[in-house]
Length: 276
Image (tube, rainbow, N blue to C red):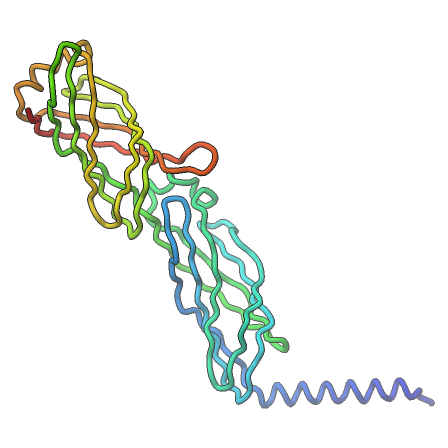
């Protein structure tokens, strides 16, 4: 039986590769990957940016290059993001390195926008993938929840009968908007329906721009001019002062670059003092 030189050379090369791989597997300890945490880098009522942190540990006396990181991010049981990242770092010898997987969450894609914030306080996530080190791949998988921003709360402090003249009256409504988030909220318009003592008075809209500061209450003032026909049933109560049952329902409009501006609904009912 005869063998060609090419066949013998290929056989020898294959044997060397197999033996070297066996030696590598015998003497090289497998690196490990640990999920550390995530950090919200920016948050608004419309979207959020989040960084997921992984830690790679190398127990070997030589550095190990990282080819790429593959990832799949599920939010609220939906596949939201999928891709690969080429990190600009290696795992140092007998050391560790941190890897970051950035993601941008658009609430419209996940929970239907601002309306989804009304009855949900967090969204579930699952992050999984592989870290390709060349000879081996390290799988990772983690799950948890990400808190959602909270919508502002509106409270009416008092109503003031500012003036009465031949054409009607002017009311000043003192409101407080409570922002419980770590970021400010800018509002462009405020539209509302006002009822005093169960009497529908007005549907109005203001064009004033306000910024609700982070983690604080922001005072707002609304001025209304009403004709006598609109307030004839409650005018005597307004003049007398004291407390009056009030119902206030409306929406905040948020700034929007294009299209219809997103809006935040609010509702408040209670008794407030009437000042003269």
